[in-house]
Image (cartoon, rainbow, N blue to C red; front, side, top):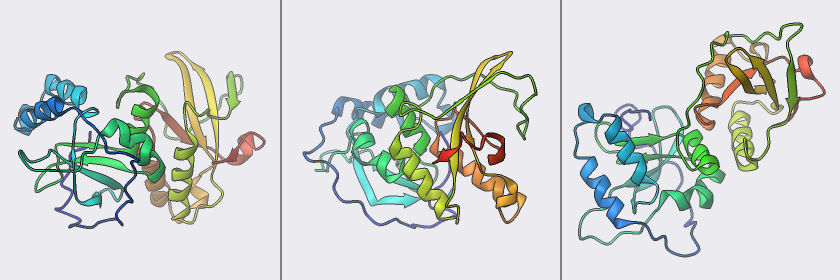
Length: 254
């Protein structure tokens, strides 16, 4: 989770509202909503791992109200669907995260922010967190801590396997969202492959993009775009960039 003030640095900057996605009203678990309402009363400095586990254990099934505006831009520049704990004894249109994921979040390229009022929101899910929930039914997955160099180098005798990521790793909706994001920066020929490498820590699976510093205005611009790509991917994914000439026949359009 990233904690940051959605309104302090950006103001109430909104994205165009979404059409109503659901064919029938959502039905969430109001008991879990009550649990969340109690949890968010805990001061931020006292929200330990037990608090986080309780929050994540209830958040996907709970009933939420929608904020106004529906979609806001975070200080990181990415769009977030704004959910709020509904006010007691007031009618509201119900939104349930586990249904929203496949209804429109994946397709529209949205994260989620919960209670983005004055000060820190109660929780922030990136698009990659949402994708991980779609693929694994959990927002965050454990991962091996890889000691990777900043610039990847394939050793001469290193054993690697090259292919393309499956739908279970990178669904079509996510590819299209990432492609659209890169195109806004003038990157129209992004390509991708999946590389499996055998390392002492285990088998390393990496998404490899054909994005290299020579294709950008500066090294800083390149590094900024590469960091931004991480917002679209589950946090345990590893991704790198390599010159297309390294595996020219294996790179395919994103």
